[in-house]
Image 1 (tube, rainbow, N blue to C red):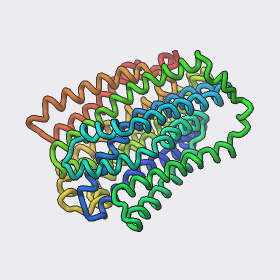
Image 2 (image 1 turned 180 degrees about the vertical axis):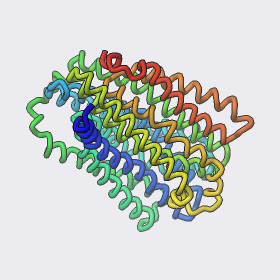
Image 3 (image 1 turned 90 degrees about the horizontal axis):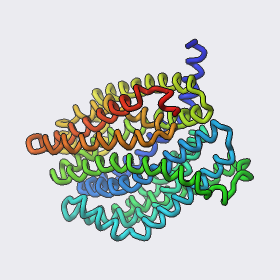
Image 4 (image 1 turned 30 degrees about the horizontal axis):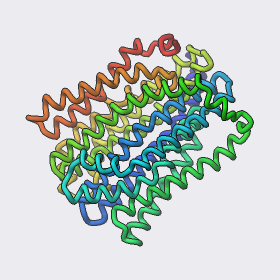
Length: 441
């Protein structure tokens, strides 16, 4: 491959990856800003309560993330095939499904919230505060789920800049309104939640305005009857079913991680919550390349262009490894300084030092499965994703059950690394070592 071709490929990758990186770094900042605000209220219990509350919403939203992934892959393939009518109708399908899901979650917010708080456990004080947070933030659900659908459509259209603008705006608004509600109006942890509610609706309104500015030429392609036709809807639901089951396994692991942390006491729960912020920072950064992989893989599958797909997979793999090594270096040098941003508690930071070796290893374990995930989502090879993550989840729980009686919280981190490593290995093997012909079948 010539130098010019490599440069062109890298430019296309970074054209999508850099805005997605910025978006994905900004997204966890919503949680990081909330944790920083909670940590400076003077009560460590607020961080623990916020960790439980945000974990519940992560469970809800991650299980709804199939909307973004399903819309991204199918839209990208339609874009690659030059089928702009299908691109437009895909947005309608995604928004209809988002509306139905949001309506159900808001309608059943009381039993969902009560059950989730019961499962997460924690002390009485932590659960009470987590409940305040949950029942305030639940009103952001319609906006948040709709944003998944819109973001996936933008990515499928090879547009990463618009989601970046929306994400930055949401974080700024979230920080501003959370600070206002907590410190000006003394609303406590509920004020942090309401800050997120306001920010999400501002983000949704902004996405509508930006869509009209950039994509109003697609309005003649909209056909409500065609968008709800059985065959394309069935395909969309089939793809989303597999992604939903795949995501449910991932969320089950993350949720079990937090729930098990709570059983080890509030100090361990707070420590693990802070350490997971480091993992979150890496995962969203690495997902910048995964999202680029979704858009590009879907496009080249739609174009029926295996040669270009093969070239892009090689470059995406290389850049994913580079990002992982950079994170390892940063965490080795400055993990304590990063954690001090979120909590001034020396007890919590010193406790985190006992487990930091595991979080430093996370980037190397996670970079490959994240990247392959993006390729397979773009190619809509969702059955493979579902099956491999199911096996990895079994390995996670099996490892924890075997090690937890003797290793306690360390067993939780070892099991998490086993989960990440096994996902990468299984995805690589089951895709026939990323065989392009198999991916395009």
